[in-house]
Image (cartoon, rainbow, N blue to C red):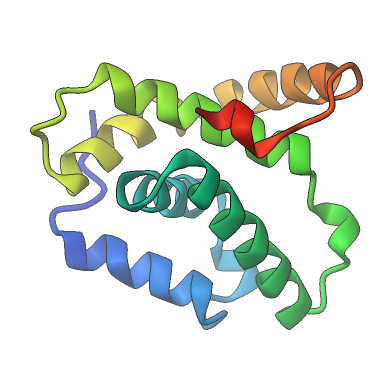
Length: 135
């Protein structure tokens, strides 16, 4: 497993760049999405993490002139649920960089991403997403 992050400060910089919209839209890729999600899930409840991610993504899309139609609520919720399930399998004593690196190692592969997003999109057609499902 490759260690993407060595310090919490590196992760905080990704989160701050996302929240302040100083990260270029082309630089906010899957790895950065996962990093922000881990940060939110480790520092708030699943419902709060969902709301932070949702509002942050809308702010980011608006700032960069990307239509809100790109945002898929069911997909965001599905990813947060998946990330939370990985976090719950990890030793709770591990540091934020260690947890983030494990999540990236397990969920950062583009093949996993495509397969999961296809399954999440299929499931979204049959289920009304609710933030409380993230628990």
